[in-house]
Image 1 (cartoon, rainbow, N blue to C red):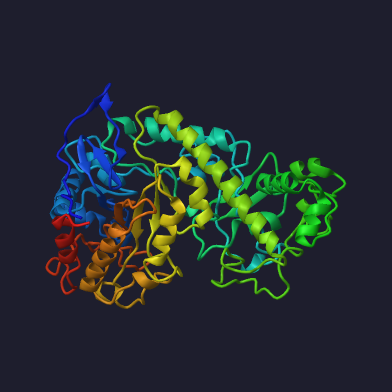
Image 2 (image 1 turned 45 degrees about the vertical axis):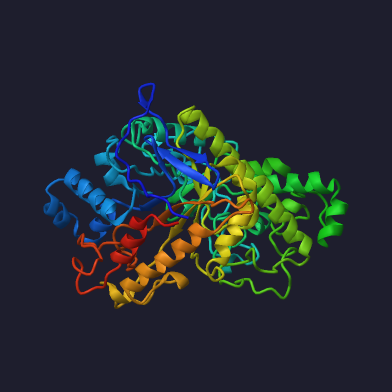
Length: 527
């Protein structure tokens, strides 16, 4: 099937005092974007059209001197994009949006906000939120939780925390209205919004490299008064681990009696709650002292959940995962996963959707949720609360391409489209030749820039040709991370070096030509 990749030329569509929001419109073959009056079959973007990587490389002043002003730089980048066939600036394009965000004759961009991190810190910039939200994936790595030392810890806002909804409403309201992010998004040339940073969805975002959220919640301490990590120290007025209480409530609703739960799990709990003498009051106050020694479900530290023969590192070295047979009894794993997908993920996505709609009203651009390689149950149950998902089509440890993309398409169903993200590199043919292919990139690491360009085109062609169960094309966007190389991680993600030279076989000599095969494909308009 052939499409013309129409580049945006700034057709104005009025909606009150602002432009009509971009939309994803169903068609007979799938979906089209409508942005500034233009019908676009799929978006093609680079992330981080910004100067952060230049600053990290120490080349920011050099690149600024090349262009004279950041406005000139931004205009030069969009000229480059158009020449390649790209039609948007993707996530984290801060400098670009500062310069051209309100210019509706420029290429649109995808504003991004790290909602969950702000909520967990209890502040958005200098603005204090209602209260810090608990981190459902924080645990004491030196504590008594089974497998704690082998489990890779991350961040996942506890969607059951009573402060979560208020914080999310405040964060997304600020994001939309512009009080902490420059002009209001309603006045900017927005293609889609990403209301979350994927790194803060640690428990639902990746099924091949992260431990299982359901296990961490089931085995964690029900009373966490203070946490300390790389973002600092947070102390909670209420120490209750509400995610674990939410799981307890789910089990009580399903099994009704503790005896029935024990029969299904092979356990010997005496209550769905805690046997601690201070009860839930002690949990709230942080004076609770029965973790791992009490006889209630909330006292569980994982010892009664994990199979005796299971290696705590799991298949990927990050702890008990979705793809591991870690449970002593299979029903344990089934139950904590069902809770994760049908309760936790739904509560999170539903509250995000409600807050987003409250912020932007009837003028909402598409909300794209970054679930890069999550469990199928996460996609299935969150699909009713987003306009699209973004996924990583060459995720670490995932099955050979395109098997995981096909799994995700099947999981999403027929009502929600997808944007496909990649982190492809060619370190051996770049300024980072001294460094091996980046850890975990696997299928996405190439030996040369032409190999990377042709490899991306081949995968993009495959992705754009995939169909869902209704015979429609669900892939509506291609996004590559990123414009520039990453000097901190020593990874050749960029379409350009950190001295602002394109990998086109001319500017970034002696390195090979990444751009030509990509340009040929995108300009051809092929799906």
